[in-house]
Image 1: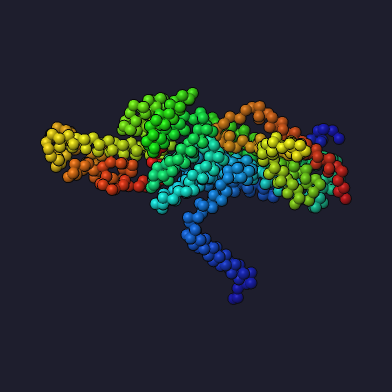
Image 2: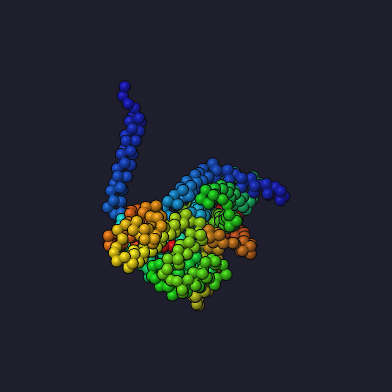
Length: 263
Length: 312
């Protein structure tokens, strides 16, 4: 099979995954997001003092991140098991589609869905910013970088959800992925704990600290809310880290899925 | 014709839904009335910012915004209720600033909620100083925090030496306000004078874009003018008394004696009243929320219509 055909097959599976997510009304979360953000933008001036812009950025980006993570987990865990349950996987694999192409295609389909979702949410965040501040400022550009980091976070969470769903039940996959999301969000604390712990426990803590995804490095919401610039080196390192970590999880999923008995 | 079973079920379900929803709302309203004062207290079951930081999974900015809003709401509720119990205000502000040490409104407004005596504030100047010092410790390059600290010392504590220190430190920052060195110098020579206070409020007005802070500064500038007018007019009355041996009966007496020109009036255009004992009073204190002079003995100025910090 040539690489052109391989790309086409992965693209086809990705597009179908995206279409299925849209058909499952995943993008309806945008309505809740729009209501949340417009409500906050209008109300915050009434109930608080001097934090309108901060609330729009903090609430907007937190919602983008959490909504996306929930979608990534809920859809990601069912990507493989649903296909097996509905027996559509056999139809797909009976065609000239390799198992790894199926996994990678699913991954791209889900991340594509989240990128589209994030794009619309980002438009909402910037509209709310315009509403509260009446104009855009130079520092608002950093909000785009924080949004980019959130997308990188989605790559990791999608990859993990897919990894767990390649060998576990949907419920257990959700539990594992969510647990890793929580631990990854507290990665800085774990790192600090590893530094102060000695002996075997210290080594174990260090190993865990490096193995779990460092999602806290991808959370720059508070910094951009205050208009802080994000160093270009951090953007580069975070990009490389997210790509490598996702590749690691997807490779794991492929390896397991390749060996899985689907009969 | 008899109603179909489905239609009947739909009607009953709709009626039950409407009734139960109305009932639930009414019950909740009754519960809120019973426990209105405890709602904000519940917010402090978690008063450890470290625990909150971990529970927030790194989304600390939003949590700090929520806690700051709670602090504003708590202060507003207590202020509105005329309560002098503000015991949760300092912990709420501590949690807010520990979650986001760069949330400047929490320092600027928070210190001014804490410091003034009730009913304008919580009467906790020590907590206000601690909050400002925490802010400076975490944001040493922000001249506004030194300015606010100096202001706090000057207005609330009348501690001019520390106020001068704070302004001088703020003046040495690479990015500062042009008035900071002037204020530091003024503290040494003219502390306690109207001109110094006026300069502080003018600096406050000119160094912010926040309309609430600007309105507050304008109200304080108006009150300062009244305080200064009343002080000067009472000095004039004293001089008149020394020269003539009697108390003037009206402003006309002072004008005829050449001490004043025209009828002096407060910033709202209402003429001042000369009392029989020689004191000067404002005709109506409405709209003069922060005056300290010109009021009948024992009277207090009217309360501002909304939450306004008494100092910036």
